[in-house]
Image 1: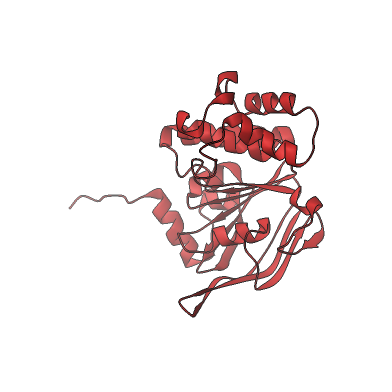
Image 2 (image 1 turned 30 degrees about the vertical axis):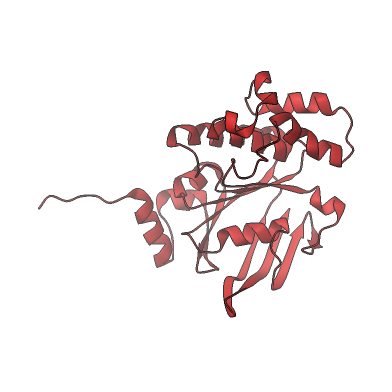
Length: 251
């Protein structure tokens, strides 16, 4: 469903070339949830934005549903995927109610039955009817991320891209949002890519994981190997050790 072949992305900063992503390759099967993990600056979000058409690749090929796409997407290609950003407050218009945020994509696409679809979308993400006419500042962080999920899914795209969807939330709320995504993924038959620095999150939701370091994929592994700690690269072992925390020794 998603193909990334030798993808590279280069930025210019202060007249200096920065290689954000270098020669990244992976495939995501239909219905699969694929994880990308790595420390800050490893290039994982840049890969996700390139797939979404928000960053232009320097080289390489991206395919969606078996067809190569360019950064400037056709109308049909844009319908294939939606993006959920890390910060739910920043990704929602502060002067638009939940109702307006959810109606907008339906009106742009000229889809009928908008009122019913908005009500269904609100219910699907576990919000109450009274939330429909509230503004983002009147919602909690978890509620805002539920709105972001509802907006992303209201057009029923087959692909969902999630960029650290719980990192801006309180720990007590993170599990709720992850479990909600798991239910929606199953209900809608989604193909997904989840970017995170948290190995526990990707281990809970993903079938396979790419570990990135300095713009490159250093290892691809199944979730079973991740849980057992069966990895090949030193960086992967260091990442696993860091995720488990430090064990204090007496003396």
